[in-house]
Image 1 (spheres, rainbow, N blue to C red):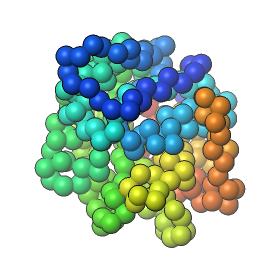
Image 2: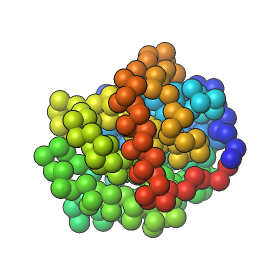
Image 3: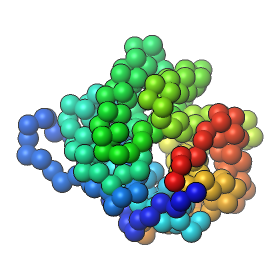
Length: 254
């Protein structure tokens, strides 16, 4: 498959949102074959886009990622606030990765599907493809994992998009080692290991590189490094591969 071409990370994460109608801020533009992330703190915690880019770089693929992320934002918030739509319209993206909260309840699933379809219209108009980053529920609601996966899978299917089975990867990891600390101390945001696992799934699907080939040491574009103990990294990579295989996630054509 064709490698993603890029040279650097543009990570657009602001401390807080602003009301529509205020002065427009700069938003990222792709260089032709890049990846835009649209989401909230589940994406910007530990700089997930940077980890994805770093994993690809360690495997010899140049992958540029950019993001528009705000704390607590749903896709509906992004549609109203419009920075993400302006970034999509700037073009240069091969895929746009969408993420919001767990969306496990029926009402939130309906909103996820509705707003994914609205985003998809803009994404297709910009010549890109929609991708759904399936996340995880709070640690106090672990029975909701299946519902989270079902919500994101439905949203992806609605638009013939790409489904990223991070939800299943977390479960696969705990099957192999229940002691893994994938949550941070707040019981919702990912730990470094949780973000690494998500990044392995995403990088593998977007590049076609096997999770087994992913490095345990990741240098983000800004120069900061994440190092996962080798034994833990092996478990996480194996879990990522199992999740991708079990969901039949297809690598997008290059």
